[in-house]
Amino acid sequence: MSTPLFPTGPLTTSTTPIQTNSVSMTFSNEKIGYISAIEFGQPEFYVTRNGGISWNKSDQFFDMSKYKNCSGFLTGTPTFFNNSDIGWMPVGCMRNDTVKYNGYFTNDGGKTWAYVPFDIDWIAETNKGAAPFFVNSLEGWNIHNGTVYHTTNQGKTWTALPVNGKLNDVMVNLEYNQVVKLQFFTAKFGWLLVAKSDGKRSLLMQTVDGGRSWRVL
Image 1: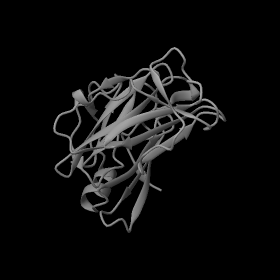
Image 2: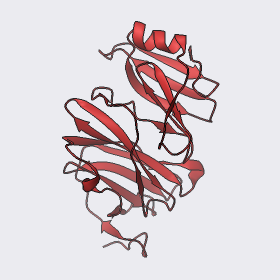
Image 3: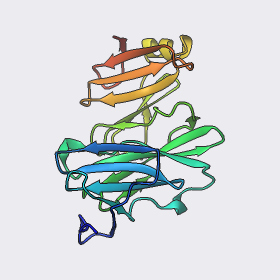
């Protein structure tokens, strides 16, 4: 059995394959990596500090008691800012063909997590790529029906930015209403990949002012 990677933290050690087909993985360097997964219907979080030779599952990540009437869950890829121990991960609650995302934030490399409920809309379950994106532990964006929402307090409150004509035209009028990927490189520069509901056509858009205006690339 491998040695716990966080010997002082409440983690369990895993040397067996993760029991799921739904896995998101990221590495911050050649040794440290993170996995989010859905195992037996519940979100789980794993950490490796030896390049993936062994993985440790946290028992401090997910609390089912915070959710009611969820038929299933989705997890996004863990994101750690500037290769630090500060990071976050979205978790979606599915219900009646819709999904709503909330956030989990950590300041200690995934040893402990803070659950932050997001006051954002439920979206169609087919629009799974529409999870919010955070550029640091406080500032993030969310897009719904052609409107961009912005937070600077870790998702506790969201402010709708002025409707942008180009973005609204693409997502609403031209019906590129599926958010495939939302990503920001800085607080100003970001990209949005949207697609038709049939998945056969997509458009890449860019913002240089924090989501207030968009152009098609």
